[in-house]
Image (tube, rainbow, N blue to C red; front, side):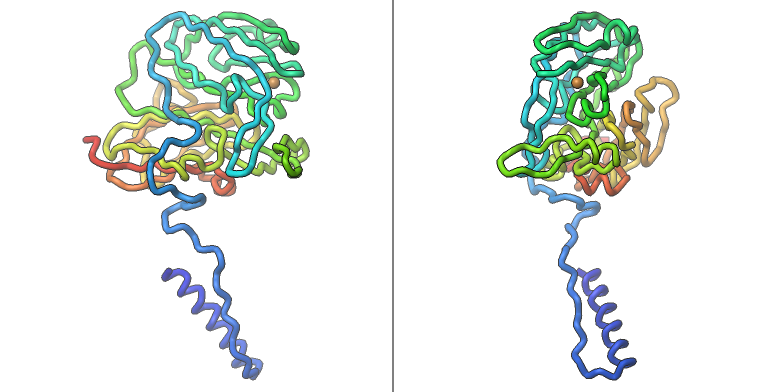
Length: 335
Ligand SMILES: [Cu+2]
């Protein structure tokens, strides 16, 4: 409110000065700001009062205990909700955006089947795999399927996505997800979350119909929404409950298709960041780390005291378009 008062005083002073110089006796017009900013740091979106579950959970799946993972994904079109009253006709893995979060351990076998229930060719590219794209990342025709196996040898967190051309359109329509590859020696216990950042480019609204992709806006790099886990600002409207002092581990994946993420937690400094998931030489004591499109990093942080801590891409046009959430730290989770 003090800010508003200062703005009003400045405007008043300008008007008075104008009166003094032009000699008019017309009462000064004082403009009042109409957009009242949320009374919370980085309140780019409405902040919910409680900690109700968000529409799409950010909880990471638990570490796996099996060594053979039969993963079967079905491709289909599905209407998703990008924001209140904004529906989008998405292309999906298993009817959701992002697709299912998958978790395996280094050296496990992934036995993968992709079934195409949509009306056009699609495919699958696992960044965690080291196999020949010309053999496996090939188009699967409607009502057809493909089956292959791979062994992830490198721990980290990895993007998976449809690789059918034009890839930008398939990703912009929602065809991506995250695969965690745990090291054989488990990481220290932590509360773990996955955030997949991505963009949506909308065509014109037609009454009663979900929105769909605007290719022109995509090529113009002008997203309408930039989101974590497929929905604008869902973790601001439904803050994520954590405890002050406990170790948080964030698997942050950038599906794009175009925008870098400048991942940052307001009010915190990362203890360690495993850049692009690499086990080697994590960054220590860093504030903001870029996650490139097609990349993913593992962030570890402890929030020092109870309170609300926004997490954002610090590219603030994108945060304003929905890439913002809140960690709501309560009670002590030591140390
Ligand atoms: Cu596709």
